[in-house]
Image (cartoon, rainbow, N blue to C red; front, top):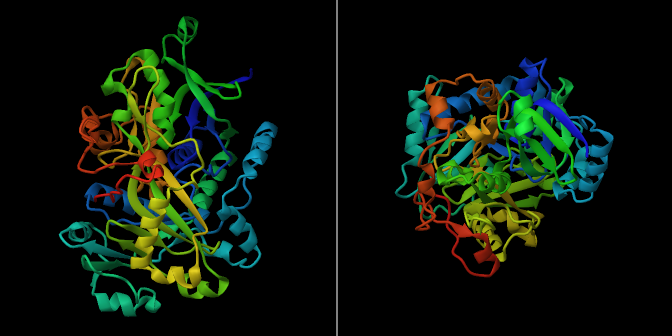
Length: 497
């Protein structure tokens, strides 16, 4: 059984773990930093690993708008985002062996990337960030767009947004949306400053930079969190109560501080530890975040279609979801915003927790596929011309908080005082990849991020009551359970803004 020690051990190489490793590498030259993930970077199960993600400052919350402006500035100005990444860093021999195993089951977007690499060498010059603009449709009875645009006007930035009428949308943008179904919608606006970024590639770029600066990337799946025994406590002078983690192949990784950036898998990792320590509800992580998935459909465009679709804007179709422009792999992505959960009871204490199921993320219930395609028929029906089928499906799992704020904090229990969290992306935090690690680093080093950020990102008392385990309603959003859909029943509820 091998063992290694680090000053800081980060579990999970999604956007929170990757960004934290990067910022630590810039400022902590004397510290040893290890990031441990089940797969090579970019980790294919992580919510952050995708073909592309939206980058925008359009928020009803002025705080998130300010933070988004900060990250948009980084996307526009950082030179490392000016081109697609090279192959990247090499892992150790045992990690390369694991990488070979993982490689046999790569997602189809990786196959598309390889097929198209030689066809368009100019892609590397186009960069990872694309200022495509976005069109947002607002449903009748909603004031979402009004709130967002009010924040734009109250900011110190130029307000680039403007109203669009239905004719402008249907006849503009190269007639892309000529068949758009606008029934049920009241208005729309255009923001040329919004856009998207190549998601998995951007994560790999940031991780490559961190590894160049000395961060150690290790492939291994964590089986359990280890507590210090009495002898460990004596040796460490009573500092902290978490010793490290053990992987499923028996390796031990210890550290002075452990950061869980484990997203939707956090409750499944923490529940055994919480049971051992006899934690009541207020100390259990499920009362801060829960695991949620959304359905994603990927369509492969023909080479001759790219001229039409390449410069399309992001389309936000109210509460139904979004359609993103194609990447250089010729894949176009559709997000359907119904929130799907997978709830189980822990075997020893019967606590309810949410976690991704063990099967492949590409397994999607037929009823969910049908609803997603109905969305496509309303928003961009030309995608289905000629009997085009979905290239592949995915249930993308993220950790979601009831406040939509991430959890960037130390565990409140003195029994776990060297255990930290960077979770709760809530399906909107990917854009913060360049900057969020700086704030997590402050948490790890005991520095305040300011009263507002500390309050928003800290451990919250009573917040779990808003999930509504007892009445099934939570904070007003009804839940759709995956098992009900798999059995052919269940009602699909779209996310409420």
